[in-house]
Image (tube, rainbow, N blue to C red; front, side, top):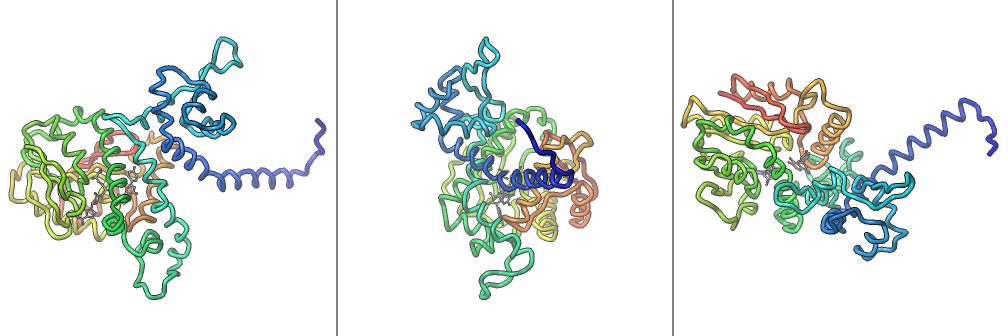
Length: 360
Ligand SMILES: C[S@@+](CC[C@H](N)C(=O)[O-])C[C@H]1O[C@@H](n2cnc3c(N)ncnc32)[C@H](O)[C@@H]1O
Ligand SMILES: O=c1cc(-c2ccc(O)cc2)oc2c(O)c(O)ccc12
């Protein structure tokens, strides 16, 4: 084929156009992933027990084969080659799509579905106006974030008023906690000498149950909003308390804050941390500590580009769905000192999460 030679300037413009369209269409990757989760494609392939051809998959999903191409373009499927180089035997699961299986140990399908639920996506349409302080509804008081601009209430009141969303959100967070099953044993000594633990904002208790399985003597109290913990089944070692962490936190040897503080402003974090300090003051002073499992920006020098980008997306997300943000070590340290703590220790746990132990 004969190409007319283009000027360098025109070439750069068309490359720029392609780049721009790529960013514009990036949401299609997310939405294809959401659709794959909705259709339970990972479970269908897993249940088939060997790679599936596109016609087999299309038939199992009751989808026209021509429409299957969209899923091969998302990260959920990988082609398995046959003997001939060009021959594709079928499609199999990738490591990320294995995490989407409805499995007891891992299970991130609810996380994907919730993060891409219209309730969490619609606030992005309000971001520009919210950043400039232009609220659509003049009658409303100052709105704290784009979620409030979109829905008129904060995410927790929205979850209370819309139980379907609230339950989905809680399942998403429980799925994130389930992954801790893979490494919790490595952190057993972190809980040594601790007889009681309060998991503040612990949702439906997934983390409490995981910890109590590896530390059988440990009594765990899960504090969360009353509508979140109402009617949840308790066990000998995992109990629930409905309340408000800004008002009071039950006393214990240690307090756990998993993915909690990143959802709040610096001022709110300092208030919660002061309440945590009161909660651990009375008991086992030697061992008393706050254990934070959260994101640290720039955690290690060898954070790969994808991990860094994911943390920065998360920073934008926290600003959009709430008053929160992700923090660097320096920013975390400032909160601890302001709340009256003296010392902390950061241990990177895995790509997206660190354990920060904070001592009075
Ligand atoms: C992002 S979720 C984290 C859940 C859990 N820690 C985890 O990692 O799976 C934050 C939790 O904080 C709870 N929460 C929000 N405001 C709260 C408050 N004032 N007092 C207690 N819990 C609260 C929410 O209901 C939610 O379960
Ligand atoms: O909607 C969310 C999502 C998260 C979240 C982000 C990144 C992760 O690696 C895990 C979880 O956390 C939230 C949160 O803490 C909050 O207060 C409100 C909403 C969300």
